[in-house]
Structure formats: C-alpha cells, structure tokens
Amino acid sequence: MNEPQKTLSVRLRIWRQPIGNSNGQFVEYGVNDIPVEASFLEMLDILNEQLVESGEDAVAFESDCREGICGTCSLVIDGLPHGEGQCTTCQLQMRNFKDGATITVEPFSTGAFKTIKDLVVDRSPLDRIIESGGYVTVHSGPKPEPNSIPIEEDVVEDALDASACIGCGACVAACPNGSASLFTSAKIGHLALLPQGQTERYGRVRKMVEAMDNEGFGSCRNYAECQASCPKNISIKYIGRMNKDYIHATIHGGDNRGPVKAT
Image 1 (spheres, rainbow, N blue to C red):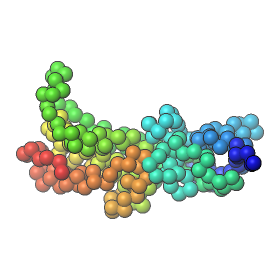
Image 2: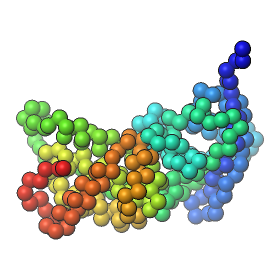
Image 3: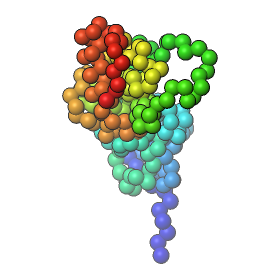
Image 4: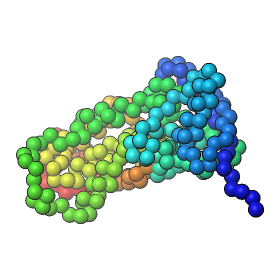
C-alpha cells in the first residue's frame, strides 16, 4: 500500500519590485520539501528562509493574524485574489496544489493600490474612505439599556453581514475596473441599517462615496467579481443600497429628511 504524500515541490513566479517607483518583473523560484499540511504563507516562509540562507533578498509580503481575520495577507495567486473565493491567503492550503505545479504570485496592485515592494501594496486609500465618514459622532450619553432600542432580528443580521468586511481589498483586486464599491458600501451599510447611524446617514454616504472617487478607484459596473472573491461573502446588494442613499443625499443636499428605512 502506498504511503500518503508528505511533501511537495512547486515552481513560483513571483513579482519582484525593489521599490514602488522602480520597474518590476516576475522571478522564478523552486521550492522543495513543502509539507502538504503547510499553508500558502508558510510555503512563502520556507522560500524566504532559502533566499536568506543563499544571501538573496527575501520576498516582501504582508501577514498578521494568519487566521483569516485581519485581511493583511492579500495576494493574487494564479490570477485570483487570495487564490480562491471566500478565503484569505493565509487560509489557502498547499494541499490544494499539485506536486510540481507552477504558481504565479502577484500583489493586489491597481490604480489606487500602489506597490511598495514586491507583494506589498499601500491600502491606505481604504483607511481614508473610512476616515471620511465611516463612524457615528452623535453622543448617545450613558450606555443604554439594550432593550431600549428594539431592532428587528433580520436587520441585526443584515448589519452584521455588512460589518464582517475585513478591508483586505480583494474586491478591488478582483474588479476589472478596480472599484472599491463593495468595501465602501459594506462600511456604509452596517451603520445605515442601525438606529444609531440614522442621524448622519446621508451625509455619511455622500462623504464616503466622494472620498472613494477622489482616491482614484474605478466605477462599479456590476461584474460581481468582488462578491465572488470576498472572503466574508459580502453581497453586492449593499452597493445598490449605497447608490440609492447617495442619490437621495445629492438630491436633498446630504441631509436626513424623513426616516427612511433601508431596503
């Protein structure tokens, strides 16, 4: 009886770019004796150990929690953000690849995400979108009694689904237009659904959509590639709601005339 395979070898085509403004290129590396239970990032760790031992510069890439929570580990693998839909790069396992496979690894580079080095990009445009209005400033006083503001269960679940966005930027990398509409609509959507977010609802959507446009992201054309690549499976329905609220905000000057229930 044959023993199960314990290690594998792959050929990597990795984007190397010394600094952001320099020219980059794909460089090929062979990585051997990779444990089949290793994650993709652990495989990159093995590669970097080999490079450092041979006196070469390690491949720069980002990671933090390595548990699918933070979204820092954003890579395009064989043309797909995170390597496959509905997972982060750190959750991608090497057992998904065949022994001897050639794997192409690129950064989440778009018009708005500038490459810093190798596989690391600047995703601060997403932070600036949130800074423009993704919060509640109205002071609510002492901590309220939870039952004092009843919220329907389906509304709570809807808001939680939107708030699950981890800001990895996979939606931007997947979109042919490089749009950040799914990210922005998720950050707008979870606040727009809750009573605490109603006071600033229309001013918020106007500020955040305009901030998104000013950062140089493309426009949404409903390709839905963003939804397919999102690790948290956030629906494009939030983009429709964002557009609806933005139209209301532009017509009424960004105020909050009348209680409008999210639909």
